[in-house]
Length: 77
Length: 371
Image (cartoon, rainbow over all chains, first blue to last red):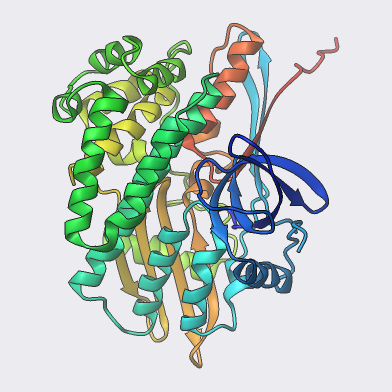
């Protein structure tokens, strides 16, 4: 039941890899399980793999919901 | 509070056995905080976006619980659609463990391409009975060719642990090799945790749903009749003769095999996984319970003036990672000849119980004994 934290893709790398921004910390993740991700998109992560691609508006709404409930969402907006 | 929770596990190796096992979780249980004050429609729009690995199951169980609270009952077609969604997500999660998480834990690469293909079949499969049948047929082919290296039905019809263990150790498929590694620790019959599967209606209402709504602490540390219980694939498959045989010998091994057995049983529509029930709990209150990938998922809700006043979610991770529950019992006293073997026991026991968040497992130095 882990909460779905949207994280922003800041850079695409070769071999289905990408870099996301987790509250200022950059982390390399795999995009092998999702199609069509570009820099600036948000994804939902699980154990280093992007599970779902979100459009930025949807991601912002989710982040705002977490923030309003007092839950820190460390991804940069 | 952080959005990312972690299950913490620690133990020491003392005189050839694991001791001082501690299981804890700081997973945020925030359903009340996120949903109170919203209308049922707002909650239903929000819930699928809140949960990452089980969003469809959460959405389906929420919809059934809110139906019950509103005094509505879903018709058979909606019920069936919801159960297909639960079964599909169960298969997708099992595939994730079998093809990616567990191989990586065992030092192999995993098979991302095959996992992607399976997830794709399952994402559109539940839409109709026809598409669900087609997806299951395709998945039976994949299971036979890629996971088992054998026909599904004869594989499922094994009666003893030794036949399945021989299959895994034969190395016929990557999946078999992974399960062989997970089954490679010295056998140990741990103290059994009572299995919990979809309970009778009165138990669901009186011992799970009402306590979940009345007691905010229940969701963090759920118990059945005052005791921890184990839910999930092993609990659901324990009537299978080979699973029962394995569970008497070693429950880490039994849980590993239960995952792949249940993958096949769901494809054959021969599993309680995917079942969903709902019940009203009095005026404006209702609950729903389902068998999803990791075990029992319960939602209970009370409405006031058309808005959510109380909302509780009790998820499988809280049953199986209870401080005195299945993981604790699996490990406390378990023999381990070396620190490496002890460390593997921690990792394999947790992975086969499958927390829905990250695991922080530590093998601590034995305490110095002073004279």
